Length: 179
Image (cartoon, rainbow, N blue to C red; front, side, top):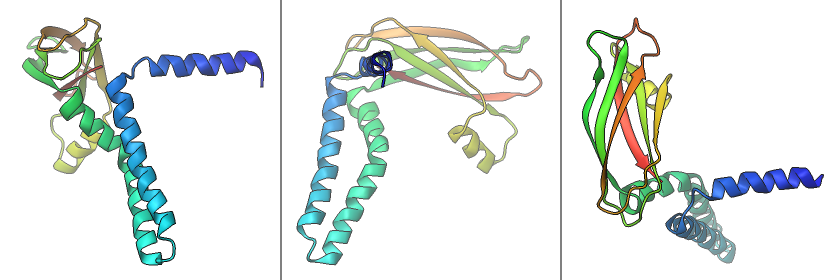
């Protein structure tokens, strides 16, 4: 391996790690330790195959559900925000959509910035297709707010988003998250 390749890997890792803070690391380490404890308990109880298999199964389930648990903990407890939309609709005489609202930091940490994502779902879709579009959207628009947001501080945002297909009516589903 060449030294320039190793430097490129370290550069990518450092840019990724700058988005993590101390609470992120603490949550990730605690999830890893819980998985490790269940795995080691399955090794300790290897003489009782039923208990060992059950503990190993728990550690595998925890391993694959760790990203979901991490996201849930961060959004609902550590990095909690109050996201209010005042407008989330199509403009009357144009093929643009207008999103307006505010974000309030009600978490325990200060934020460097926020990201508003708007998912476009066709309006005349059936229920199972609606769920599909929510999970695998065909078009998402991201609006990046780079203003820092301290504890109990509110910031307003406005975005004019072009329609991905002017002939189709869309339902907008907007969400916000901060880092």
